Image 1: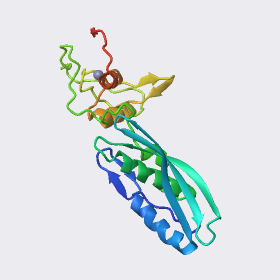
Image 2: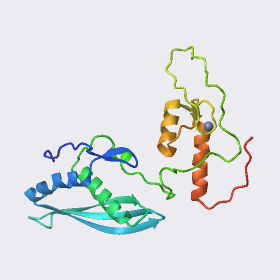
Image 3: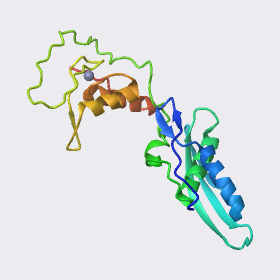
Image 4: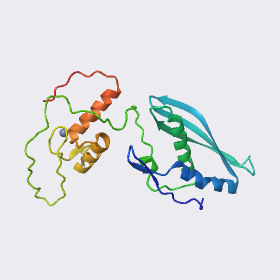
Length: 223
Ligand SMILES: [Zn+2]
């Protein structure tokens, strides 16, 4: 275990813009060690679920001392893979094995992998809905001059107008906590590649959810 080192996240997922440690790096580091110490790891799928584009598989791992095969133990791990084509099983398998190895050998990849690596969209909708258009309520973005008096309280402020409704993006309250303009813009850029105010961001998310679930909503008027 002492021979396992910290592996940097050397690759970037360009679609979703996050760094990760590729499976090959981990496998390449572990493989010679397993050979040297006579350890075999067998992966076998034991449960399989598919929901839309999401494949979830439970794997059983047998870790075996090849010099004394009765010296072994069994562990389980889940792998999830979201894929629009037929790679869900491969992704689930790779991810499950990768995290199993990382946990088994306490390999650090820098940062919490669960927070950054597996990005699954349970409703099967793609992460960004490019080509989505502004709310069709006949309103044009506000074209008033963008002169805003400087904030008197020396705090850093970001002045940005919503691409959709034209209002100045302001901090929002969520679960009793204030969400900064910076995080609202970061989220709307990440999800919709637009600068959206909190209201429009929530409206876009609601639309995305409505599109993903076949529910008919009464026509709503935005006044
Ligand atoms: Zn807006």
